[in-house]
Image (cartoon, rainbow, N blue to C red; front, side):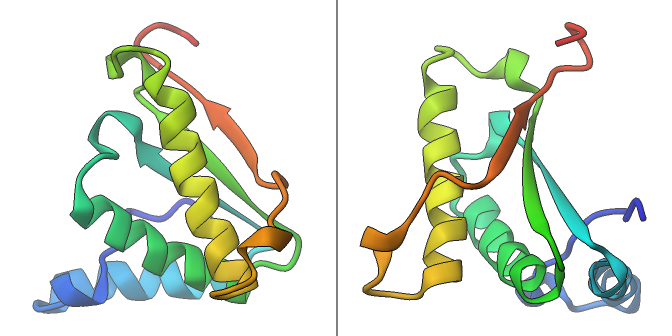
Length: 122
């Protein structure tokens, strides 16, 4: 399923935003694999991390096989070495949710990550 986007609980004020959240949640229930696509150029914002953490928790609870992380708009990230930091931040969030607090030492680099740019055909 392709969902219109994920709306964090804190933004869940109106009926239409609640509907967006419900679509994402219900789709994750049916999925074997959950693909989380994020805007790499906006990834430094705290609000993005909060929404991602909430979505990753939902995906971990619901997905049957794995979570795939897709960093979109990588052409807008400068310097390109920041992409490694962004990847590490999001994979660490996923592992922190999977393993729980205090078990970070058990983390593995087991999250599949794709970096894409439709503008540059990357």
